[in-house]
Image (cartoon, rainbow, N blue to C red; front, side, top):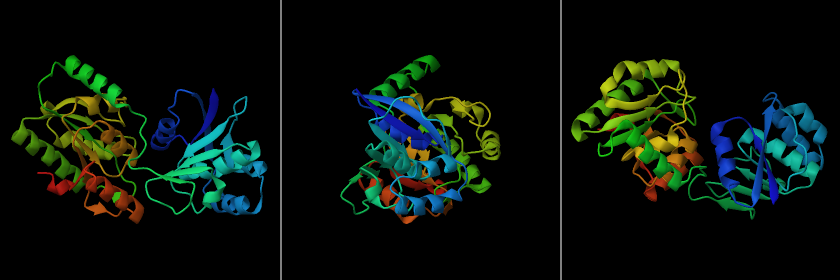
Length: 300
């Protein structure tokens, strides 16, 4: 059985993509936390990788990490801050390395295989139709059924609202949160639906308080305010929901939602300035009918 080391930056969206790629029966996964000590190391590491075939000493200087015992067969990571560690460690151990995401201006030749949503023009690039997600459709369906049974709402229309926060060029204002709450109320009145709502790490307390104040409690059959009491509910909410609404700032949340096989609405605030690659990916998902793009102000 082969061993894969997943280099983890601690960000759930990145780690989950790597877990999804490593989800094979003949792989043993070992997660290795690696923390870039300071962003000033990025250009230095980029230059050193170009100039030196082996640079383990730089890895120790730039990152806080502890290597597990044994040797991996494959080094794998996702997210820009892990890319340098991925290259340096693979060189030192002389192992193939896989990377998911933007290369931070590193030449593609430094990786065995690179997984991206948009083509980067190299022979070792695998272009993904949808982002990687660790969730399985069967698990989503099972947990959704269990949640409906626990709530006693087998035949009631349930819609899920998955909320992120500032990131990827999207910025939310109090006006956006107010509009989102008003849209949820209007949709409930129109379609008789009730809501499963969860915020996330990026939402923040201020936005959560604004939403708590504006959304009538009777519309929410189950809710997670992440800043106040985090709880893992994504699979259950996605499986229980008849429609899924996700803010567009999180590619990993969109990836999870698309696995469910339920209509997915990708919501954008007024300040939506994603870079060209991110915007292109969202438009491709919409063209392929994987998501329906909506501005928050146009939800109703």
